[in-house]
Image (cartoon, rainbow, N blue to C red; front, side, top):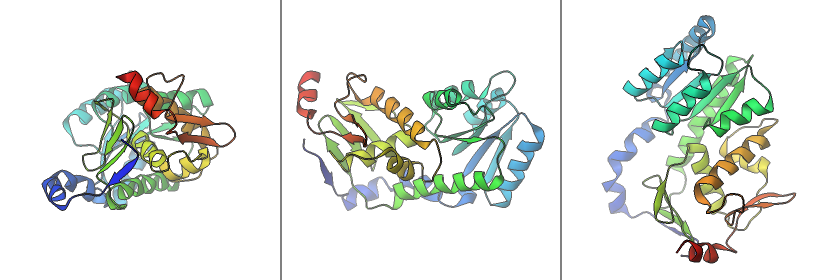
Length: 268
């Protein structure tokens, strides 16, 4: 199937309306439930109180084990997660959350080495805030995440975006690769949509970071590289020799249509 956008049918929109309600309601802070996880009482209490003043619905945990118990029992929309904690640390907690859900996970970390940051993204974190930080930074990240959700629910809609053996059903928020449903994080999902909507156009890492993460940050290109690598592992037959998410030297990445037919033939 050639790259195409099929506009949403009104009848289908009504049929799936109930499934869209929670996502749409999330656009206001009072309907956005945040789980704050940090073993430092003063910081956790400050974050909880500050977020409540902004109108967010906040729950808190002092360790990874408690966080996972809350996550299993409550409908959590975003997790602010400290990395260094006794017992189950932030990395392990993030891995467990990723086994259950694709909700955004923002790591709070004093481990600012690039290897530590990359490791967090490799296990499924969506973003990170280095310690020490100001609450304005936290607020800005949350607003960025709300904008992502707003972009998903309010952008010009399409029903299906397809190319080769990759299909995105935006109404159902699903991705099908070679006939199988693939689970993507919100970052990976938006990254795939962005490149598929501009096939064969080289897109810089800076543009991808601004569009998908929604803010400016030094070192953001490293996060793009990690997200691209994770996405390749989920959609490519051979991630080390990608045919869809292709690196364009000196320019960034592109969603290639050149080898898609060969990819489909190989899969068959």
